[in-house]
Image 1 (cartoon, rainbow, N blue to C red):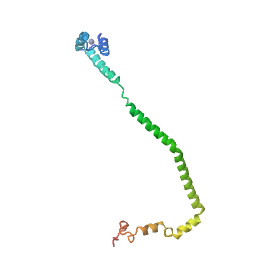
Image 2: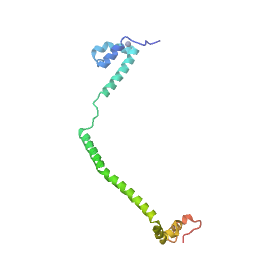
Image 3: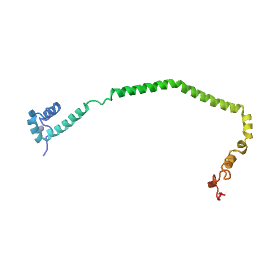
Image 4: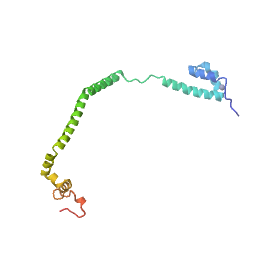
Length: 156
Ligand SMILES: [Zn+2]
């Protein structure tokens, strides 16, 4: 059996649901028709769904309390003021750091002979880094320090 695609009461069902008259006693003949008509039953189902969604969307918007908005605005204004106030300090620190690093590099290059002589007088530079590390981590100075590097047991 083929159900009809349209019914003459579809529009009436739709208007009754949208206007809120569906639950009124005047809509009783229409409700009786919908109980027997599949097309109008579908229209009623869809119209009620959209009416519920419309009512939910039209609800009161969730606006935070005015005090909370004011407090957040104050925090933001304070944070932005601190950023504005400390920006020159941060720039000065960066410039100073860069200047100090470049000066140290320049000083090292300019006075390299004196620096190399000073380092060669200390044991660290004379022995070389590898020897210094080996000596520093030797088991004589720190028992067990590099035993894991040696194949034979070295604990004594
Ligand atoms: Zn119908």
